[in-house]
Amino acid sequence: MFESLTERLSGALRKISGKGTLTDNNIQDALREVRKALLEADVALPVVKGFIERVRQRAVGQEVSQSLSPSQAFIKIVQAELEAVMGVANESLNLRAQPPAIILMAGLQGAGKTTTVAKLSLWLKQNQKKSVMVVSADVYRPAAIAQLQTLAADVGVEFFPSSVGETPRAIVEAALKDAKRKFMDVLIVDTAGRLAIDEDMMAEIRQLHAVLNPVETLFVVDAMTGQDAANTAKAFNDALPLTGVILTKADGDARGGAALSVRQITGKPIKFIGVGEKSDALEPFYPDRIATRILGMGDLLSLIEEVERKVDREKAERIASKIKKGKGFDLEDFREQIKQMQNMGGMASIMDKLPGMGALPPGAAKMVDDSLFRRMEAIINSMTMKERMNPDILNGSRKRRITLGSGTDIQDLNRLLKQHKQMQKVMKKMKSGGLANMMRGLGGMRGPGGFPGAGGPPRF
Image 1 (cartoon, rainbow, N blue to C red):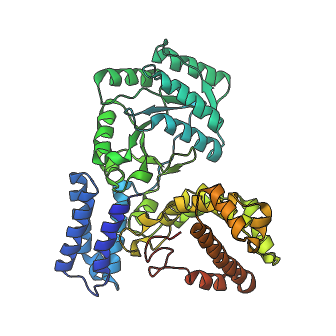
Image 2: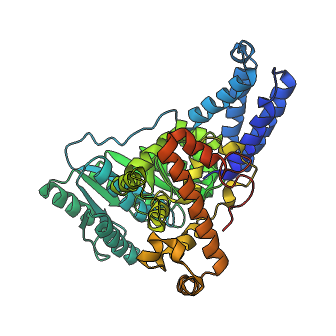
């Protein structure tokens, strides 16, 4: 997420971090690099101008000159201003209303609005313990209604049926009545999208807004459209009283222009950010966490929260207990570790949240290929349980059978076995000497940059 912006900004700030003192010249050089990085990230020009001017004023003032470490003070200013541009703090949903609290979703076609309705309903169900009903008022695209019905069943929330023969107003009135009858906490209304903003669309959604009087009117927009996302959100906000924005497809957005432009141009906060295709790939938008991620400082809080949510604690404790008792770390345990990592969005997602990523060589993070881990899992799946528990029994004929079954070759299998041996050594150190020894063991597996693969692409 925002890889190219992270690379450019980290590079600009690395240049100034080596300076013992700051002068007008090196501040101007750093600001020029930062400005260039923001423009290349497709951040809106007025936002870039305001950002650079605020950083410049703070950098040449007393704030930096009186600091013991001027270069660190400059980086801190850039971080603070990034947070300010995006809104300083997360603004949560306002659900303080007589149930059902109504959330109206708006956006252009193709922004991922319907899937976001499902993601948001799951988030409310899991994190807010709310009962949720969803309804589609998109009578122009029959597939939208069927899609929402399927997604609602997948995430386990109530679906109110509608059809293309009804008017959007009749649909939402009936859905509201049913939500009240069933004592639902939240009703989320999916509206029709268009390929472009038109007056008919705006008139229809204004009418729905007047009928429903929602507590939240959220604009769903594709992060990959850059500053156009902010301009489209502004056009909607001019016609409709938006309360916030949801950025979708941020996992595919290397630039970050939308995230840095939306708040300044619309005046509305980004409340959520979509970070993948899965139903649980929706996160509250925390400007401070995103700012540290953009600067390559990681996002440990989000990583910890993700571990809490997605890692199977029972399985993790079983493996830890097994290692503690000296029973070893077999290939079945290794497979479980790979699956847990994939549940968290894969290695690239984890690395994105680790501190120090800005210190990696340019493009190193992109070299992490999660297909390698999927191949590892396929190889282990092709083994019998006896082979997973005791890989030393793998002879030539067994190896040929496994590689044929997994669609891989002998070299792939041998590399997997070698990596498993390394993991076993790390686990033994963890058992006998605690965390310090484990970290030393991991140190031997790190690249020059301090992280796996930092010296080049991960090999398999």
